Image 1 (cartoon, helix red, strand yellow):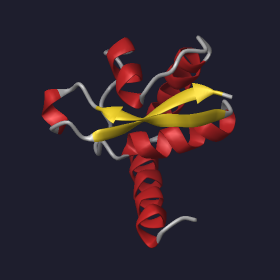
Image 2 (cartoon, helix red, strand yellow; image 1 turned 90 degrees about the vertical axis):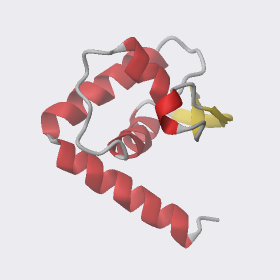
Image 3 (cartoon, rainbow, N blue to C red; image 1 turned 30 degrees about the vertical axis):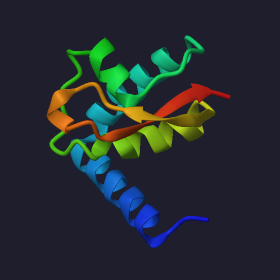
Image 4 (cartoon, rainbow, N blue to C red; image 1 turned 120 degrees about the vertical axis):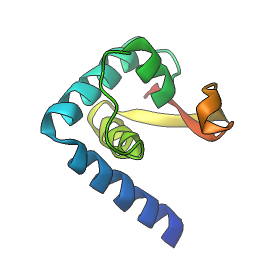
Length: 100
């Protein structure tokens, strides 16, 4: 069951992705699709590491919106969580995805 916090987080991520623009969203979704096609587990952080030339969105929450869209488009499922490796995000917990 989704909590109000889950719903608000999803809405914020979607707004941030929309604010990043259609071109950024298309490139980000394409990058996620390529990584997902490997069949290996991954995080949005892994996508950013693999595609360093992909511009950062104005708001990092845009990646949440992209991953929700990618989950539907590429049939991704959450297989757990782990701590992010990027020291700038202070060991935040990130979702681990895999193609269903």
